[in-house]
Image (cartoon, rainbow, N blue to C red; front, side):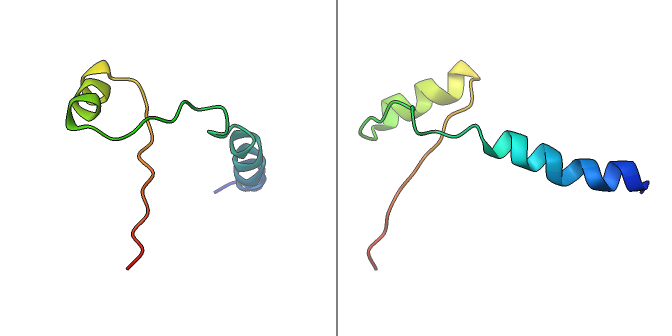
Length: 52
């Protein structure tokens, strides 16, 4: 790997890390909504919590 490419990787990570899901719409999970999200082909995020 060339030095320039090696140094570009952290820079790209910083730039893409600045884009986050704070403004994302939150909805309750339903199987139907999940299947619709899959079929849409658009990126989506599943966030869940397990207290155990």
